[in-house]
Length: 368
Image (tube, rainbow, N blue to C red; front, top):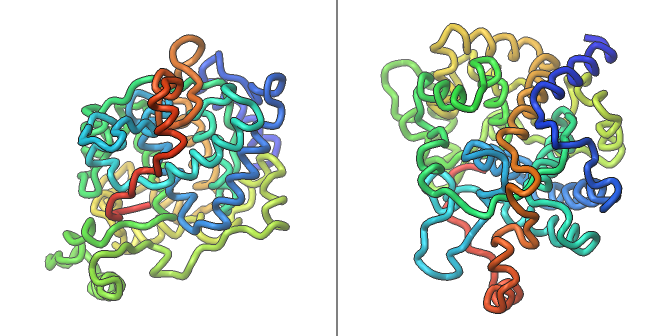
């Protein structure tokens, strides 16, 4: 696909999927450097933290799949108590990481433009930037989202796919958010980066029906045993490490949509996830079951054979994901701190907590 055709396709898809109230560079008049600040901080974070891109991608996905992309997953009202009412305390979210990255970016943005840029926009922009910096496709992100002032624990329990979900369960959950089978397979390509806790792949490791290649089972068992069975493993552990782009390469990715036209790109973000599924080497049951459905299997094979196609369709699906049920106008707020709503932030007790309390301790690892 040529550059002009690619740009036209992106523009058409973009118009269809985004809310009319969102804008390109919505902060250009009230906080002109906002997106550059987000990019700069994201770049610093991913150069310092190997798994930051996968952590941000998971945060965005888990946020958008519960009542839309409104930063509700970032809220944490526990304040040292046993309160379990927030989304981030729900079982599917206990292994999420990267909250500190968003808080760090937000703090710098607040220093530039207090009370202007929403946490929802920061999460969407930082995820896009981190994907591109790791070698994935660059795609447009409109801005103007507002942050939710509540968090839905029960919805998080119901709405996030499990590592052991069947293909029918996975497709149903994605369909409830408007994604067809091919878009679902494209988004699951995000599993080409990040890690999964060894405890979540035991069912794959212990299969004796021949559905999992023996050499693959032995390889993963060895990796997990090296980590005392309590660590995590990634597809990249089995094929070599990904690499973050150098400064020179990074500049090439920020030539707009040209990034999408380079299928070789950067290190870990390519079609190896699909190539692994072709030969039965998916880490998760939910991943490998993509080959058990005719429609999803066709997409897997298409992406395995054409990394450029995967990058384009992943980017289009990410545009759609990042604009699910966004809040605009008076339907929400611009939080001053991403983990608490403004009513608590501005109260004297919460201000004291905000300035002195450490970030919540992370839960045991499963994936990032």
